[in-house]
Structures are given as structure tokens and as C-alpha cells.
Length: 121
Image (cartoon, rainbow, N blue to C red; front, side, top):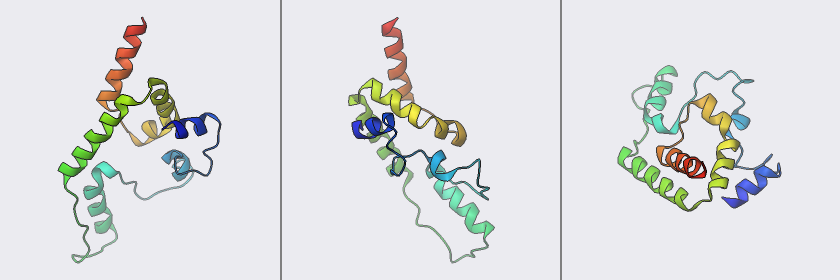
């Protein structure tokens, strides 16, 4: 995490895998027929397969939503040990992704930011 934040602050992420999706996909410059999200992958894939008339033989192996929720909860607990300044930098780094793609800051992180701001007051 510190590597990503340091490189972001020093503008070294130009060719990195850590760039924002907004910068990679350039949704304001490229007309996409569909934009899919990981959290709605099953529905998005079904929609696209129907649009391209893939037929009944085309399918995706569904991933258990329980596994998705468990891995999401596990990653959130990892942020408990990340310095708050790094979290703020990451939120700044991916700000356009949150705005353009409708991402929500996870409640656990929002609570931590709120608790920090109220303890400083």
C-alpha cells in the first residue's frame, strides 16, 4: 500500500497496474456499449451474452456470492492497519472512479474517517 501511495504522490503511476479505472478506460473519450461491474458480474454478463445473441450454449460459471462477500469483508479488515493518511491518499487517487462508476466508500472506512475527524475537533 505504501508503494502505491508513494508512487501516486510522485506521479510515477503512469504505466502501472495501479492507475485508476477512469484513466485506463477513459469513459469520457470512448463510447462503450456496456460497462460491467464486478459486484454485478453475473447480471452484466447475462445482459451482454443476450445482446450479442450468444445462444443457450454460452454461460459463465457463477461464483458464489458468499465467497464474494467473505473476501470483501476480509479485505476491509486489512484496512484497519493502514495509516489513515494512506487511506485518504488512496481515496484521492481513485476519486474519479468513485464518482463516475458509482462506487461507495465502504462503511468501515467511512466510520474510521469520521472517528478520526471527530477526535481531532
